Length: 146
Image 1: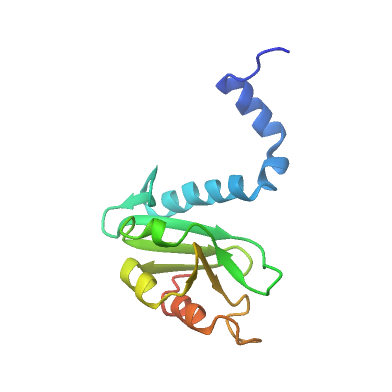
Image 2: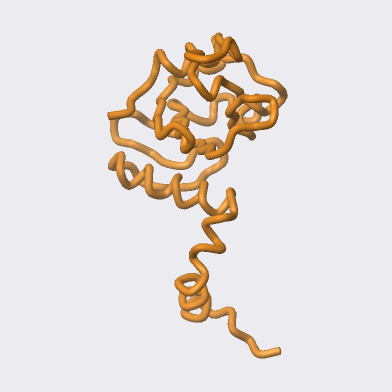
């Protein structure tokens, strides 16, 4: 087997296979995290507890979701006690409805209901259901979509 794992090999392979890569939720989420930091004027750092540092907003953890679960909820994962005190602002990017939210740390931990490390909310933002009303309202209170 030939060694084809240098950065230039990987870059060439990536360009030829970008559609395959974008089907991987983790790969897509990483791209979203990096791009969101750039769009916000932050420095992407990918540290434990936060992904970026902004001059005025501080440490920001970005979470992205792009599909509805079988129980008719949207969710972010790895967003429980493991993140406590690791960020100042939690940015949630809803790729299903193309909405963006920035929730302060204390509001997220004081008002949000988590299921282990998952945070769930309504995919219709309670316009067609009564799913996860508290979490959905928390998001709506901190929407920043333009």
